[in-house]
Length: 276
Image 1 (cartoon, rainbow, N blue to C red):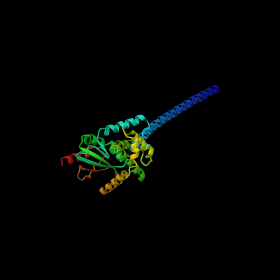
Image 2: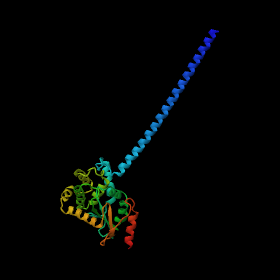
Image 3: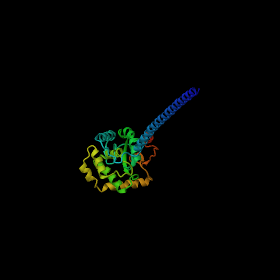
């Protein structure tokens, strides 16, 4: 009897050990499954965070006005920018700060700061359509005028605006202006240096760099910048871009289109003037 009892006790113990081992395996399997699920969730979360970070970086780059240095690093990028600007203004009459036929029936005065990111928004947004539809067809001429708003240092502002006007002495100011906006650096980063201006000038098709360098010392050019500021003040302009529009040879009126990316409000204003 005692031997049978011992066997039963041994069998029970072995059964208990098997049950315990099974429970332990089950617990380990559940733990491993839980870890795997957690790893999967963390991986998915990491992917989501990476995607969101990439989107944020893209938005920051898109809205910050470009890289800190502004000028593209690669020759391919530079050539693409020059080609884009040449497509925009190439073949259109330029005279100093004026783009378009001098006898165009309509005049648009565009007050801008070359470091202004909103001016860049206008340049890449509404302006190409305006140039194509109105300037290239001889109906409108655009006069670029200087108004300091985004550039922090007055001397830097004068230097960069005079550099553009100096290109205008060779009737290539609009190439310089458009290249500047296309290759605008990060605002308040101090990217506008002599090297930056020289590299911009080197990209202007057909610009005589020796003459451009000499023309930058022309004492009449800073006076133009000063007079532009006075004209803007008289109109009550405090931001850029700001616009005056009207029939050529007559008094010009403020144009507040309400957008810098869509050409439609500008087109409406021009059409109304032509019909008047």
